[in-house]
Structures are given as structure tokens and as C-alpha cells.
Length: 249
Length: 249
DNA sequence: CGGGGAGTTGAGTTCCGTCAAACGTTGTGG
DNA sequence: CCACAACGTTTGACGGAACTCAACTCCCCG
Image (cartoon, rainbow over the protein chains, first blue to last red):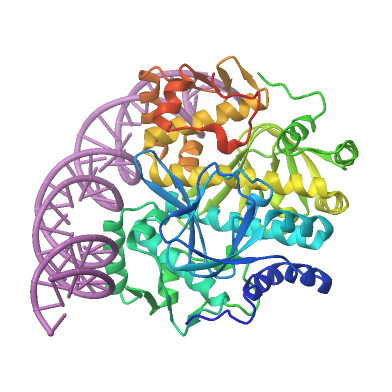
């Protein structure tokens, strides 16, 4: 169920390439980027709000979440990054982040200095474009998240998240038939969806009882993608994973 | 209460320049961009979901909203663009939009072809950078919106929106002491904040009765910015309007 | 003067949050 | 190998914030 080992960067390349066309020499430039492997501490911010960062983090395995937080400790997760995603790519242009990051499970990343990324973008317009596009996809996902939290019912929110993650894991080739690894606690799911973990639990039970999906421990099984997509009003277009990477378990 | 007439682009330049440093020749390149004035139809999508666009829209006056929609007609506004903002700048890199746009009031824009923007970005790395940054600020605003909708109470949501818009209008120099033009119906406010217009109304009353702010017809008056900011837990950092553009009416 | 659209207000309902307890499961140490 | 502590999940009872529905007012414009 875990793949993506060929070249640790391969997933990221695939994703960029899927959405932008890069010249061979641009791909080479990307491959030449300096990067340092690192294992992130679980459930501890490795970037805090208002930190000045000088590197971005390419996720190799695991999950990274982007957090905003209220004073009372209530949190909102505004992005989930899985293998092949570049966490905090935006900080290349805005080193002073306005959000925090933490790993939600055992995760390994490659640290890439901003200087290198900036240089690559500066000398290869195609790369600048690809990076920019990557950010825009991030935006599209967040925008859909806003619709979810603002206008979907609790059950539809959970269903939507399962659909989205299933598509993203599929694109990363980390899905096995109808199941994939799931690293999120129910609290995290609540933090993504603007719900409490208690209510997430109830909604998961409801989805299970309707025979749509089962989330147990560390794996998700999608029994009926179409059914999930229906109650979630899920349409994968916003993920920009067009082409053969269909989304229809 | 309406300013920003010197050069219609001036507001946009200011904003870009505030956040990125542009060389004189890059500023010239921006000034040389071809642009066509246009008055947008009110309350009708001028970009629909899945449209292929070939231009972006620099707002000169009025307000433009970015919409997502559910099948039952429930809508979520995921961005508000005021004078000096470039609406749909992201579509430069992703012409097939996954959101709709409409003017929420009488608004005038300048249409700028994507080709021109793309050329400018390609030949001037500084411009590419500035555009990318602009998108990232958009993201930061949306991310804060996600926190708002996911974790703030209804009253705090309304207060937060008032704080944010007050800061943005201040930066655009379209605020007069403590009041600014307000083009949004209560339904729109609800669509931004994930509330119903009825409840928005109640919260506005509450803010009025507490002596914090008054929204009447087409103007907002902020009586007590600090008080609003307090209940909203508003911190303007995410708007990236640092420097002398303080936010403390 | 009259009609339409937005804003305002109240009454009743619902969805989701809160609180609290019980139930697994994992890991640690005796 | 068992005990138990720690943590996450599961479930129930209850309360409250926000939604729904519906009536009414206000204001603008013809």
C-alpha cells in the first residue's frame, strides 16, 4: 500500500508534470535540487506561526497538516499534504508563514532550501510556472474545503474528505484496490472539517452502516465510491488530476 | 470615500509593491500591459465554473466575489476582491477555472489578457514572483476564512469580516475615518461566512447593540475596532499589509 | 400609490457540540 | 504473561447555537 520509492522526488515530478509541461532540462534542474532527508516529530509543530523559514518540505511518506489555531486551542487544519506534495511551497515567496505545520503521523520529508527553489524558478520560467500552478491547486483544494465547511452537512463533509483523499492517494499510487492507509485520528478529521471528533465518529458510523466506507484504525476501505460522491456532491475536477487518473473506485 | 483614481492600476501596483520589490523597468512593463475597461453586470456570473478564460480582471471600483455552489443553490463565497485587487489572477496558470465570479455591486474592471500577463511574468522574474506572492496572499486570506467558518462563532465571524474588510479598505485608502462603503447584502455576508442571512442580521444587531460597529445600508461604521478585533481574535498579519499601514481605527 | 426587494423579528426545530462514561487497543513494566 | 496506564474510539443524554419558516417593516423606484 506504500509505494513511491523509485526516486523520492518522482511523485512530486509526476504531479508537477501532470499539470504543467516541463522541458527536459527543467526536469534536470529539479532533480539537481539539494535536499536533505529528515524524519519529522509527530504531533509537534515543526514550523510555528510567524516563523521565518528558509526551506520547504517534500513529503516522502506520511502526512503533514497545515494548522491555524484559536486562542482556546481550537484548531483548523487548512491543508493535508501526502507523499509527493510539497509542504509550504508558498513560503518560498513568503518566508514568514502565517500558519503552522505538523506531522500527523510518522512522516519523512526532504528539506529543500528556498534559495535553491528560488534560483530554479528564476532561471527556468517553466519551473516558476509549475510552482505557481502547484500553489493554485492548493488554493483550489482549500476553496473546496471552504465550501465543505461552510455549506455541507457533517455527513457530507466526511464523505467528501474520503472521496478527496481517495483520489489523491490514487494519483500517488498509494491505494490498493479500494483501500488506503489512513493516518488521521478522528480529532484531526474534525479539525479538517470544522467538527468535533465525537460527531466525526457518529458520521463515520453512519457511513459504515450505509455500506459506503469503513474507517478502521489505520486503513480506509471505500465500499461505494459513487455513493459517497453522491452524498458529498464530490466532483474531482478541482484536484486537477485529469487524464487517465480517473477517480471512480 | 472612493479614491484610487490617479492611475487605475495604481492600487494594484501599490499592493504588489507593498509585498514585493519591483525594479523600475518591471513597473514599466506592468504599466504597459494592455487593458480594456469594462462594467460588470451585477449579480450575474461573468465567469462560470469550468469556463476557459483568457483574461484576468483588475477591480477599479466595486466588489467581485468568487463563488462555489452546491446543487441546492447554497453558495459559498471564497474570496472578495475590492479596488486594486486582481480577480482571478490564478487563472493565468489555470485557465479552466473551478469557481465562478460575479460582481456583488456596480463594479468596473480592467480586463487584462492572460497572454500579456504570462509574457510579463516570463520575461521579468520579479513580476512572476510578485504575481505568485499575490496568489499566496489570496491563500492566506482564504485560509483565515477557513478558520473563521470552521471554528469561530457566528458573532465572531461577522466581527472578523468587518475587521478584515476595514483593513483592506484602509490599505486601498478607501476608508474615511471609521467608515467605508459596503456593497454586500446580508445574504452575501452569510455566503462568505457560512451563515444564513437571517442569522447575519441578528449578529449585526448584536454588534450594533454592543456599540462595536454599525452596518446600515451602504456604509459600515466601526465604533470600536479593538473591541471587534477582540471578539473576532483578529490579527491583521495574514493580510500582509505590514509597515505604516497599521490596522487600528 | 403600489409593488418588489432587502432587512428585521419571532417561534419552533434541528443539527451538532458538550459532557461524561465505557470500551478497545497498545505498550510498558513487574 | 498479566496488570495497568495511556490514549483513542464509541455511545448516550442533554443543551444550545444556528437554521427554517413566516410575517412584517422599511425603502426605493416606477
